Length: 155
Ligand SMILES: [Cu+2]
Image 1 (cartoon, protein in one colour):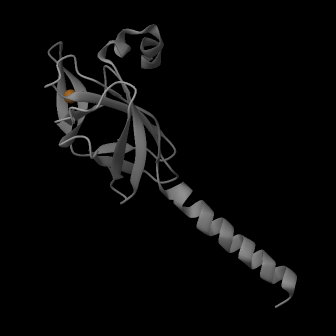
Image 2 (cartoon, protein in one colour):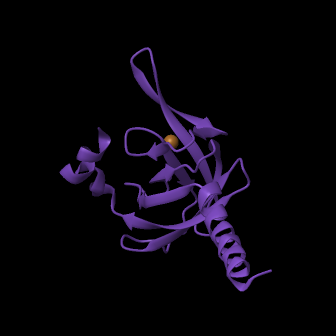
């Protein structure tokens, strides 16, 4: 095999190896956790999932700093907003799944008592495809949701 085509084969292989995980695993951006007003209550978790070329679904979340994390959506029943625990939340191919105040959110139960505003909380999101995406969530005080900056994110 001529050297030039040998090099080209290596480069193509490298591009495939480097590119494949990026295309397959969803990306998680802008993760943050809102501390509860009362420390015994669960905290809320928010982020945006950006899907790869294939559809996927978020099926679980975990953190070494929380005993248990549930995936919640918000549904309107007879004019009343209710939270509902979900076991699978679809992420369309090349689309996004948003977790934001007033809508989808993580509920973090049994948050470690040493977690405080300004911390970076390790968070792992598990997808139906088998992908596990690790991120860190910025811990913010409960008042954060009422700031205009956050309200603007809810469009
Ligand atoms: Cu909830």
